[in-house]
Amino acid sequence: MSTRPRISARISAISESATLAVDSKAKAMKAAGRPVIGFGAGEPDFPTPGYIVEAAIEAAGNPRFHKYTPAGGLPELKQAIAAKTRRDSGYAVEAAQVLVTNGGKQAVYEAFATLLDPGDEVVVIAPYWTTYPEAIKLAGGVQVDVVTDESTGYLATVEQLEAARTERTKVLLFVSPSNPTGAVYSREETVAIGRWAAEHGLWVVTDEIYEHLVYGDAEFTSIATAVPELGDRVVILNGVAKTYAMTGWRVGWLIGPADVVKAATNLQSHATSNVSNVAQMAALAAVSGDLSAVAEMRTAFDRRRQTMVRMLNEIPGVFCPEPKGAFYAYPSVKELIGKELRGKRPQSSAELAELILEEAEVAVVPGEAFGTPGYFRLSYALGDDDLVEGVSRLAKLLSEAR
Image (cartoon, rainbow, N blue to C red; front, top):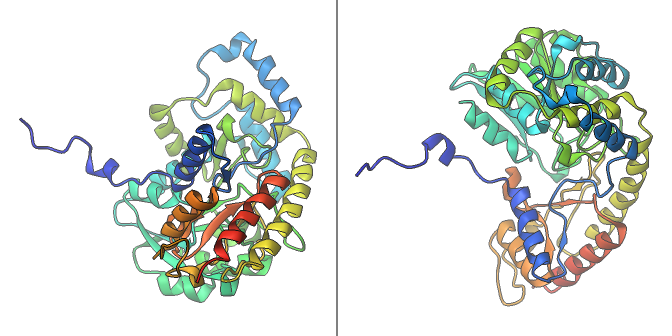
């Protein structure tokens, strides 16, 4: 009998998505009759706008969309994404520089798979979204973390980035607005970081999926537009999931130099072929329309953001900087680690999150999932009543810590 492992080392090394795992457990508990409130998944609680759904229904009846279409995306959708990019960030690209992917995650994976050779280093600002490390690892890359904390609002400096750079550094991953922290870099900060990357000949992979979700005096700045010196060494990742409440439709995209996009398209042609045509036509309606739907959602998110931050900061031992974008709060709970709570002394934010789920029936994602233990991520993309009830339960339980 063979003694070889059944699962390859490459795939065995992949971790389950922590955010989806928390969401799955919360939903299983709810199905079992427990009144769990979940702050885990980054998913708007709004339905997809009706005009987008109607476009999908119409497409489903069109025989053209019952067949294979180009692996890189419907030509009309690629053109519309190029036009939307110019409209929203002032960055001019051709349709040939667009690859339509099966959600934003596929765009992340294909970007790193296309750019990295084994041993190439990627500078990643922590806290980071859970999928980035796995995509970098699968591509053979080496992740080099630049750790930020609540004292700076989770913003990294050029000095920190330079300290992490080596002769093996090939890519900077730049995310603003950020998941999980909601941090948003100012134009000046973005320009400084982009010029540093350009000076050292680095690629910049920038995830802009939360571009329309910024609050107060914060403004979204595309590093590709703000730093033309980067030239053709920028890859933009984006999608319809967050802006149009289309998480389940699975349409994202990658924008970059023509040679990178062609190579990534070749990869996709063997991995999945074209994205669902019906979903692509829904995405076409989304990106071609106005931004009134996201404006309505942004107003609700802003209200919930302020409520959540205020309530979290009223809990002894919890400190939450005000997030400027996306729809997440990232409070520090370091002062609560090791304290007695309901007869237990959780020794990590992961253990504390487990205790909270069992005792308060509230699901949060621990900071371990994002590369910085001692924190929680809470999404405020849920109804106002559930948000208040969930944080109230959290406050009641954590106030018992001694």
